[in-house]
Length: 500
Image (cartoon, rainbow, N blue to C red; front, side):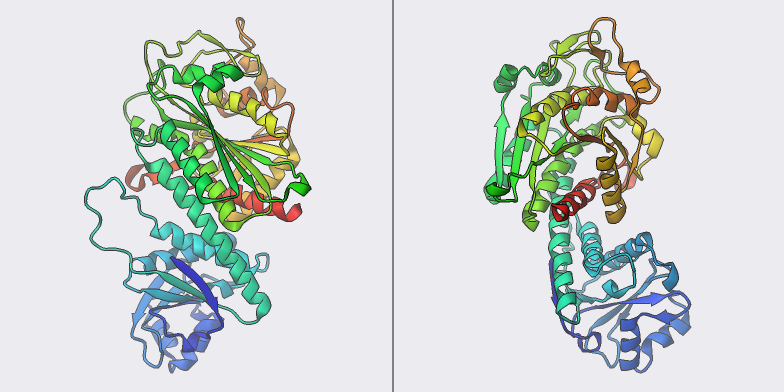
């Protein structure tokens, strides 16, 4: 889908559709008032009919409006003007996108960015609209033999602006919005693929493709023999039960000149392409969704693509440890003890707590990049789903400043996180009589003890952990990857690039 901007005024627009906002109480937005005057009071007449009340997310499509050059008018309810919030604004954008994507309109002029949100700039408002259209237009039908008969007809959205400054902000919003959608779509595609396709080797190949497509990205893939030489006994212990060889995928994005010597942000994403639980095998019901155990890794792919599309002036390294966790005669057994790259030993009490086993070696490996900060992303614990549901990502960190910036980024982009404590008392639950630590800490505070485990490998740098078990995908009729936390990570990097 193409996104453009121009100085065309709504009443002169000859698009297939013109998108207008309507406030609760039959109050018109600025552009709606202009169109109402140009069409002899058409919109007010429609409002009197009661087919749309202006509630947030309501929509009404009018065809062939008299006195106007456009073919359709899409009226979108915006609620009460004084109660307009980030959440309601996104609801408005989502409703408009869904209504338009399912229509036969080929292009549209969207005026929703004019809605007044005092704390949000024009570029932010444009970006939310583009993200909404990206979400509404996403389809995953790559694995179907017969594609849907009805193909999407919408191919262009235009944003009107007045003045050079406004035009520059709209263009910035378009740049960031398009890049974010591209990153989210990549993350969703990788996540939605079945485990027999999206293997560790497949992810490695996709990383190489990113490296060939973007000159700013250098891709390196470490094989099992290389990992063995580095002493990654914890990571390699997980892949022993699988016929698929483990991979350590490294993507280095250089967005600044060498002269700046800027320390990179390192993103470490869990890439378990299928998790059967190993010897501690999972129940069969719902096990198909364990193909989503690699969404942390997929979010790193998506974020790298987004910042490369933006040409963001920041250095970022993406590290994705990738493996399968399967039951086999050579698989980890409860009670086994493995040695991590850091030299610390781990007693494996539950082979289904394998994500931390591959992440800990990747976190140790990340020290070689002399990072400014390290953020790991993982579908790590079911306990996080119980604690926060599907609304917020769990956040734990050894640095409150970093945690605060991630929370702020999530609030700004709508991909929110919630901080949990990382106290020594919880770390005590990981004690083992036979090794330096156990890989689980019991039923209580499972999300926190998992982060405590990882924190033992991050003492030499500033680190945060994002547990996305509840936010990475949806089940049921709308089953599929959400693309989170690509927006949160991308927003954090945008903000950090500005600070730099």
